[in-house]
Length: 234
Ligand SMILES: Nc1ncnc2c1ncn2[C@@H]1O[C@H](COP(=O)(O)OP(=O)(O)OP(=O)(O)O)[C@@H](O)[C@H]1O
Ligand SMILES: O=P(O)(O)OC[C@H]1O[C@H](OP(=O)(O)OP(=O)(O)O)[C@H](O)[C@@H]1O
View 1: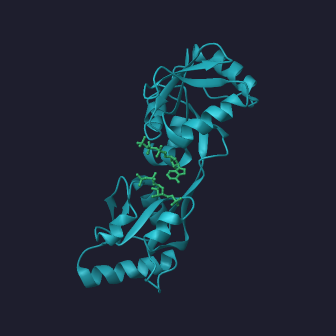
View 2: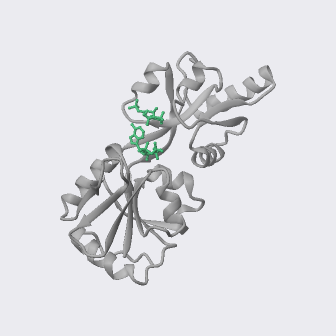
View 3: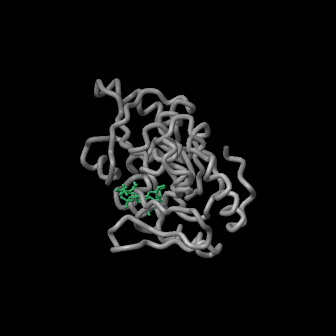
């Protein structure tokens, strides 16, 4: 069998089902709405595994699923050297969101990463601790700030409602996903003009760590059905 991991709820699940369905591969949830099992029709030997979008990178990295649909942001953040663990078979054209860094809108002198660096040094001198950036994207944000020469900060973990941390005074800045920008505006935050860390969308990934001995020929048939170039995953 070839195991494919798909987000178990929400927009990503529906749009993934639509994307495969439009290409002749029908996916559906079986059993009750909250039962995380599913079926795939159109290609023999494919098993659907419904998982949290955030867990799919780890399952691919561990080789427990052969294919997985999740955000490109989550794979880059959750897997060290992600290209050694997975390969991108196709961008899917939905689930678009930007991982950005934002600061309070009233920081009128801070519009760029250079400004943030200067503000961070001044903050440390004034307060005796490093400026706090709240995020759940630790690896991506750390790599991005290092590459851009910003050093005088600390990351604080925020697994949700990240934009609220500034108002709650548990952070001075945030790094989070935005799509419409509504949440940032509602929380009086502005994006630094040169601080788009990653432009994310949903991607079909293949695991480099899975056992492809039986699943390889199934992948060839699936790729053919989906109109994708024959992947040289393994
Ligand atoms: N407006 C948006 N808000 C949040 N995530 C979005 C948005 N648009 C696209 N995404 C993408 O959706 C993915 C996150 O999906 P989701 O929140 O279902 O995953 P999750 O963190 O695993 O959730 P849960 O743990 O609750 O299942 C990320 O890749 C993210 O970039
Ligand atoms: O730019 P916008 O269209 O306003 O969308 C961005 C918001 O959506 C996400 O939160 P989500 O609703 O997934 O909840 P979370 O806070 O638990 O991540 C994200 O973390 C932002 O808070």
